[in-house]
Image 1 (cartoon, helix red, strand yellow):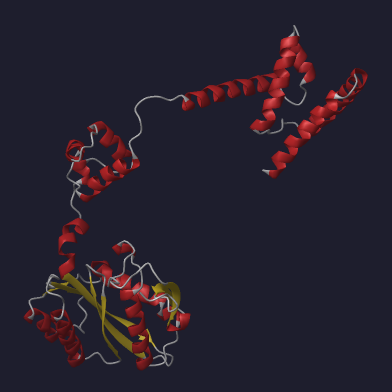
Image 2 (spheres, rainbow, N blue to C red):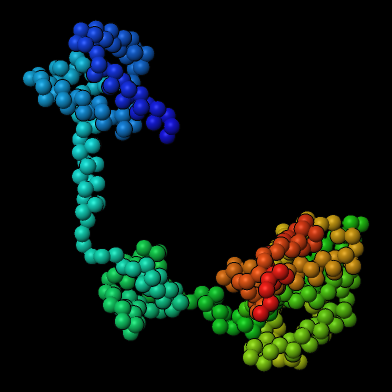
Length: 373
């Protein structure tokens, strides 16, 4: 951009300098330039590539010369040595097309554009109910006092890449399981190697609806008694849930032998059905696998775990941060446990989690120097 500006300023200065020259000086300078141009032609077998802003003044000069001479093509062949006359004339036709295209865009008529909020409402209705067609969406908008033609609805959905209702209405596993996600949970094991290469097993549970994680415990020997006790403690926690929350009905886990029959029996006694994933199919338990990835990338990969006690403290700190302070993309940037004490008043403070080696969080705290009402 700076280079183009310098060249344009140089062109203006050259134009001002030429206007002050006498006729004899102009003729001598023209003759001198004409003698040098053949040398330049020998060094450049192909014509130079010029941007549009440099083409415009050349075309203007050629058009003026063409209007003042009788034999225009012969005169152009003598005067324009770096470029062919057809090239300059082609530039002129391109500038004319650009002029009329720009004028048509400025004077475009037709229907007025749909308001942005109405267009967003059309997209929202199409995505929330995939069985609604163009006529149905236009009818629902009519109930709100918004008159919109079904063809306009179709054009809006096409711009946003939303297919029509027959193809959009096909059910997927996500849409099929969406009404039941509040009553589904998943669990899984993961392993961590300590500083002395001792393997520690971690058992956790995650609610699919709220993405809330429950830390069951960690041990180097996950035998039947330990696993059964962790299942019993989780059922106690689920009994303390508010009465307006739907009860848990399904628990997903793989076919690991550490999930014993006594483990499943604890949940079956509470009316929770066990759903076993297929063999070697980690995607069937995708929510648990995705949380394991978050735990490793955000926490465990940045720490050296000393022992089981150290691992338990780290996990409690991270899970508290994950449930109460970490925005989640699947929840529209909300936390699994909503912060009911959130306020827009106060001082913004930053708090380090696990010594700031992994995570930080910010929140508003009451201003200690504010005036008390």
